[in-house]
Image (cartoon, rainbow, N blue to C red; front, side, top):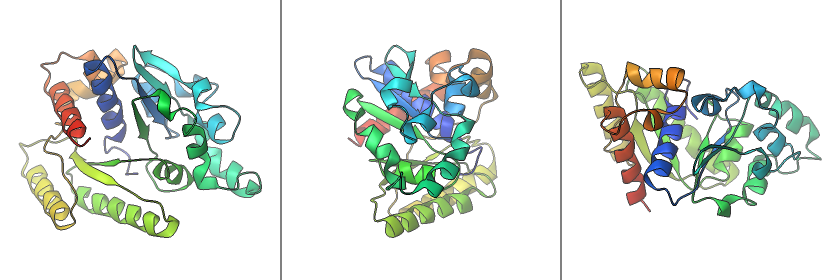
Length: 255
């Protein structure tokens, strides 16, 4: 639930990839709830060529188990595509059919959640029906933060929006931490923005992960050319890969 370009899909796909590749005995699922379908794109899939997606799941036509695609040995994805843009047009006028519109995902997820050790969910950029369904099922929320000119302001808006949703819907929203993304420590702007974000987190009792994900042109190219997340397409010595593995370890310390 952040503006586009904040690295949320990169965060989700690389964390899930790090977890599955470093721990061969775990089974990991990525659920893509973003109509852009970037999680599927990251693994070399073409979202709009996929016939059965999370749209069919949320509208009751299919179960999650019927649409999942295996992308690595122990890593799976439940894809999304532009059809998700029409979810509100389907659900809201038919409230007699969809009696609990914010629990559509929960009803389907309950059926398969014990089949996986870890489930990551990629969200759309804004709060709405889709994001509300995600918030209703998540145990923990990670907020990506890009330290650009508007990064701190946007990050604070996300935190406040989550708090508003919690109060309005009575759903517990557990933010476990903030991750700095696309960081260039050579610039004073990034240094200053990260310092401001750390101060806000400290004052509001929000964890800011020690590990930051650096900016890298090579990292961006990995998806375009290798059709895989950087963690699966680059050497373990790559700074980006090392950062994601360190971040994964920080997350596991939380358990």
